[in-house]
Image 1 (cartoon, rainbow, N blue to C red):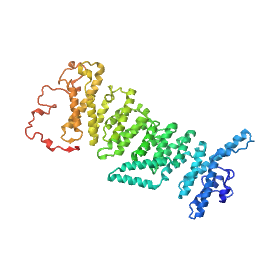
Image 2: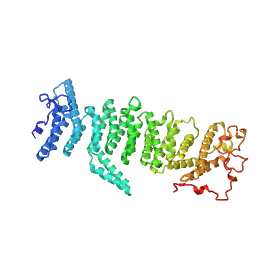
Image 3: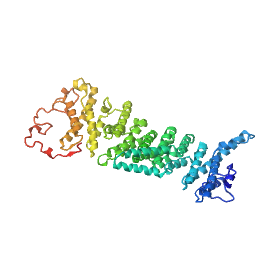
Image 4: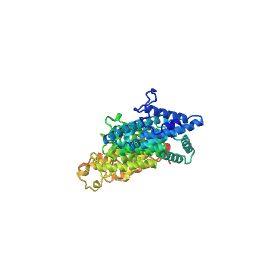
Amino acid sequence: SAISDIIVGRSWDELGGGGVVVDDDGEKMNTTASIRLIRLWRSALRALDDVRLVVRERGEVLGRSLRALTIRLCDPSVLISSDDTFLSDSDQMKKDREIEVQAEYAAAVSLGWLVKYGLNAPCPEATGICISCLLGIVDVSKPTTLQPVLAELCYALLMAMSGLEPAALNYLQVRAAGDSNSGGSGNDRYDNLERIRIQAAMSGPIATALNKCLEMVKHVDLETQQKLVPVFDSSLRTGAGFATRAATADAVSNLSNSCPSAFRFKGISSVNPTVRLLRALYYASERERGITAKDKMTHALGNLAALAPGSSVRQLVIKACKRYCESSGSNNDPSARKAAAATVRAIVVRSSNQLYDGGPNDIWRKKVLPVAFLGRHDEDTKVSTLWKDVWDEGGSIMSSSGRNDDTYGITLQENLLPFLEMAIISALRDMSWARRRHACSALLELSNSNILAPTSRSIIGDEDENDHDRFLQRAKSSSVLLRECTRIIARPRVWVGKADTIKAGSIIAGKWCSIAPAKGTSIDSLHGYYHTEWFPIVLKIDSYDDLFDGDGWFALNHSEADYLQDANCDVDEVK
């Protein structure tokens, strides 16, 4: 009580003056204001954690008085408003500057100690008074006052988002997740509890202080802004709870819009903090189970990708596409497939500027969009919707950019036909049956849309030289895909999706039969443009026993157990 009365109304100079000291080791005859303030806080916290009731009550009184003193020392407007009116303008400005410097000293000492020791106090009462004081300091301080400790303060607040949360909430959510294994709506309960926990964390006092700190970032210098990027990366990688990771994702989204220059670093990508943060967001979203935190991270990743180096974004997109293709079949991982699809969608939708530069390998046309075309046929409706957005948004940008020097066609499917062909062939030969089904559905879609068919002018014989390359592109892709369909049909194994392959092969063959030349036809009779080997279907008029060249189908005797091999064929994944 006596100490509480003594410290009321004291100024920085009256406490001992001096600069910033991070510990309380000082000589008795040379004790600065920093040392005295730290010792007062330590004494208050010890009193609040005492086993005796009387001591705890005195500690509460001291804590309230010390909180008021600390906030007053960090608020330069309180001291400036009581200035001497008889000072000259130059003296008044000098004195105001001294007061602001002293406020910076007080804020640096107080925030540094409160963040390091106060928020980790074992006593709930001590933690509460420290949080209250910290919020008061952030509320009254100017950006220049908090600038020296802004990065450390933001990191401490982010970590406190989960550290100060009651453990009972996590227990309830884990139990709800366990119920999902025994049936019911366990996943829904898990997501609802996660949403409630995040809403409670985002509306709490820690989140309020964090938001005020983030609002100050645009008023500090660039060097201080860039110090926050490694802080976000560290909080994502070391954060113990999803509330910390969700708050970090929101902070990244906020700063990428208000302070985009903070994420632009010079140097190679391997040591670029923005690239590390971009990768951390992707891996965190892949591991996160809750849908709310996952969506926040994906949203932040899309915003950050617009500011990251193009080569790093392309590497991440390629990795996501590869991860999607590998996470099926025996390695089925729905969470990884959804995270990969959501990552690519976030980049395509929120960082569309990256799509204009596909790099030396032109990954957007040759890799990403073909994967999206097959991904639209995913059995998971959420994943297929994500890939549909990638196809629509990315396709519109590709069409407007006009980068089709090596391909021909009007529609997006025809323009990307050579790359779609390679993606379908790769999926049809994949070890995963799910990937094969996607490829069969995509192949049937191409066949029904008349992409794997002759051009209209070639059918009516009114073709000019300008359509030569377009016809040749269709013919080559149709030949490759029809050959693959024939190879699959010839195998006796039966599996879900094979019917689509048979149907697609029949459609392709039927489209090209209308202009199929006879083998040995001269080039002149084909308008001087095409060789017979370019056609998917070529008629062999001197063979009456073959369905396909050399198979002797019609010469076989089918009277005895006609399809002996079919009796031993495997049936796989029949629904």
